[in-house]
Image 1 (cartoon, rainbow, N blue to C red):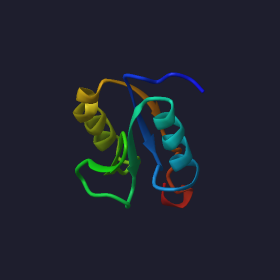
Image 2: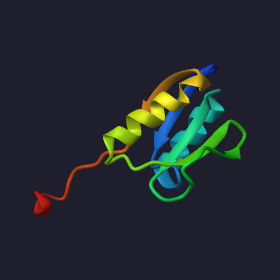
Image 3: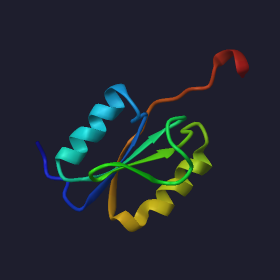
Image 4: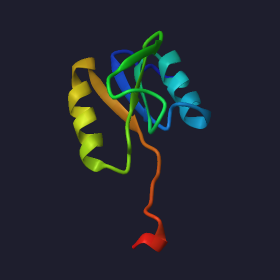
Length: 92
């Protein structure tokens, strides 16, 4: 394990699966973790566990992602793990 004490991790896609495991791993390493996902939580940070908060975040909207990160700076320094996204090629 590595030491992430005094760090904040913003993990997208963190409601379940690999994203949730990454969030748990960061928390176990000492980070305070913001779990972001498209549909599982509300628009305000919600405590969902020890040093874990959930927030609804659409990673396809760059403005919302930047705004969310700016709003959460009060938690401390940040490391990020973002989900991948690409537009539907049929919609170009």
